[in-house]
Every structure is written in structure tokens, then in C-alpha cells.
Image 1 (cartoon, helix red, strand yellow):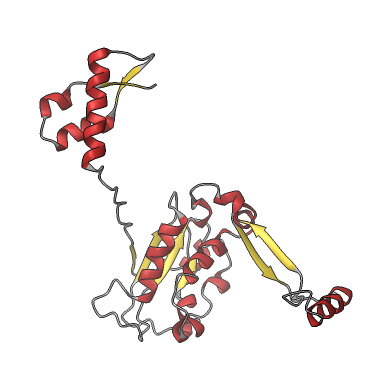
Image 2 (image 1 turned 45 degrees about the vertical axis):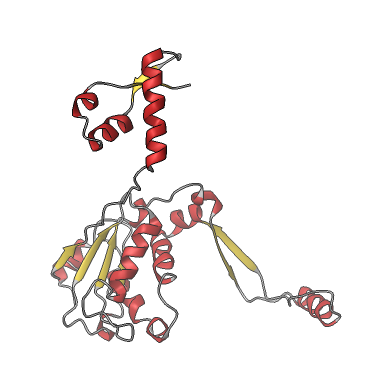
Length: 242
């Protein structure tokens, strides 16, 4: 278990953070630390799920649970793309049955007028509200839903290997933790036809000088460097914004 000094430095619920560690065989496992600050939720969750399954090890086997311990910090600062903050919802059923709605639904289902039975009260919560209530649950759901649905997931051992904290403090200061470096994003190169068309448009705009406003573009400079024309890359290329 964590030392008293590490536990006192952690302001959260230490008992909850350390729960279930005795059931995990920690021998030979690494303690990987993920910093979720300004990271995209889906890309971060995919990396965490890979480490939990042990796919980053040369000894990986799908029937063996030898993934490392994952500590996720700054869960409240995770980011999402698009309009997911308001358009994404978490839905679940309470299982509570209103007797009137249940009997009416059962009668309609028996008569063939309704396809599904009444299954209880449907609850939903937007991603924005969930981040305000408990940001750790957002990352937990994203990671666990990326794991394969087999017995290794059912025994909840992989769930116990995931420790998420909203801030940068955690009670595992006495463990040999190591920071996980997120891989750089791969940007697809522009296709040759599109590149040639853009270069022709830039040359035409530079020759004519038409347009209400012209400014140098970084894409043109990078493309010129990649094509080996350093003299042209050093000169600013004016492109019409129209």
C-alpha cells in the first residue's frame, strides 16, 4: 500500500483510490502515468486500453492479463472534438416500473401494437453535465468500452488497474511510476494532384496580384521545402483569401 506521506499529500478519498489493489498481482507490472490535460478523449482512451491489455509488450497474449497499472491525472482537463460536449449523452435505465405504464405497455405488447416492453425509466446525462459531476467516469467509460468483451473484462481485474484522478495529485508517490508519452499525431500528406493544383493557384495569384487581401501561407512554404526548392520556400508566397 501507499505510504502515509503519499496518502496525506492526496486530498481525495484515499480509501477509494487504493481499493482492490490486494486482488491484483502487482509483481512485474509497471505503473504508467497518463496526463489527460488537453488530450482528446478518444485518442487518450485508445492508448490507455492498449496498455491495460498489455498490447505494448512483446509477450502479449490475448488469453493473459499482464497489462500494466494505469494512473490518469487531470481528468477534468480532457478535451473532446466537435460538439460532443453538448450532443453526446450517457443513457441508462433505473429499472423502476410505473405500474400503470407497465400494464399498459404489456397489454399493447401482447396485442401486437408495440414492439418492445416497458423497461423502466430512461435517464440521460450530457457529457457536459457528467464532466461537471464526475470527470473520472467519462474516461473510465471510454476506456472500458474499448476493451474486448470476454472473461478478462468480466472479472473486473482490468477495471482495478485503472486509477483516474481529477487533479494532478495521486496517492502512489512511493511507487516507481513512469510517465507515458503520447505518440505524435500522423498528418496525412497532401495528394500529388491536389498539391500541384494548389501550387498552380498560388503562382497564378502571385503573378496577377488579385484579391482583396493576400498573406503568406505555411502550407506553401512546407510544400516548397519538401519539393527541394529552398530558394522559393524562403520567399513569402501570397495567396488570395477570396
